[in-house]
Amino acid sequence: MKAENGILKGELKIKGGKLIKCTLELHEGRIKNIKITGDFFMYPEHAIEKLEKALQNARFQEEEISKKIKEALKGVELIGVAVDDFVDVIMNAG
Amino acid sequence: MKLRLLLHEHANAYRNMAIDEALLNSGIPTLRLYKWKPSAISIGYFQSMEGEVNMDACKKYGVDVVRRITGGGAVYHDSIGEITYSVVLPVTMFPDILESYKAIGRCLIAGLNMLGLKAGYAGINDVVVNGRKISGSAQTRRHGIILQHGTILLKANVKKMFSLLKVTEKKIMDKEIKRVEERVTSIEKEIGNVKEDEIREAIIKGFQIGLNTELEEGKLNENEIEDAMQLVKKYESREWNFKR
Image (cartoon, rainbow over all chains, first blue to last red; front, side, top):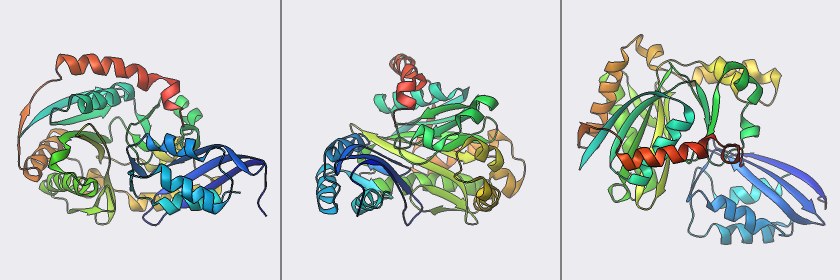
C-alpha cells in the first residue's frame, strides 16, 4: 500500500544510459506537485512543463498516471527515453 | 548552401549560451567554435541544478554554472581542456532528429580521423575513440532551425569534473572516477599534444566534408549581437539556472 501523503522520490536508469528522476508531493492520494528531471531529450523541450502540469491533481494510480502522461506527450518526440519510463519512475517513487 | 564560420575565443558560460541561442534565433547556417573561461558546468534543460551540481565546489574553484536550452546531461567545460562547437542548420536538411545527430557526428568523426584518431559513433549523441567517449552533443529545434552544440575533449580532467558534480555516495566515488576515466578519452590521451589550430582546422574540414558544403569565415551580425546581449541576462539569472 502506497502512502497517501508525503514527498516521494524516484530514479530510473534507462537502457542506453539515460537517467530520469522525479520528486512528487502526495496529498490524500493525489499528486500535488511533481518535478521530473534527467538527461534525456524531449522535443519540444517545454513539453516537460506541460507534462508536470498535466500530472497535478492526478490520482497516484498507474492507469490514471499513464493516461495523463500519454495525453500530455502526444506529438512530443522523445529521445533516449520512452513514455512508459515516465510512468515507471513515478509509480516506483517511494 | 554555404556555412558561416565563427572562430570565437574564450567567453564565459552565460555569453557562450546566449550566442548559441541567438544563432538559433537568426537561423543563418553557421559553424561556431569556442571555449569557456572561466571553466563552467552546463546542465541539460531537464536537469535539476541542485540535484546535479556541487555548488559549493563550483564557488570554491570559480566555476560558473549554466542551464542549456538543450537536453542531455551535465558537462564540465574546462577552460583549457575542451573545444566546443555549435552548428546551426535548417531542419529541411535533416528532418529526422536521430539522423541529424548522426550526420553531425559524422562531421566530427571525419575531423578527428584527419588528426589520426579512429573515431566512431556511439549511442544517440556521442563520438568515441576505441570505445571511449571523446565528444558529446545536444540538440534543439525551433521554427525550422536546428541548433546542435557539443564538446571535443582536448584533455580530460575527470577528477575535477567529479568534484564539481554531485555523486551519490562518497564511498563509490573513487570507483566511479576510475570507471569514468576508463570510459572517457581526449585528443591528448590518444595522440599526445596537438596544436589547437590544427584541431580547429581538422574540425572545420570535417564539417566541410560531412555536410558537403563550403565554409566562409564571418562575424555575428548586429541583430545577433543585440539578441545575445539580451539573452545573457537570462543565462545569468537564478530564475533560469535554478528553474528545475
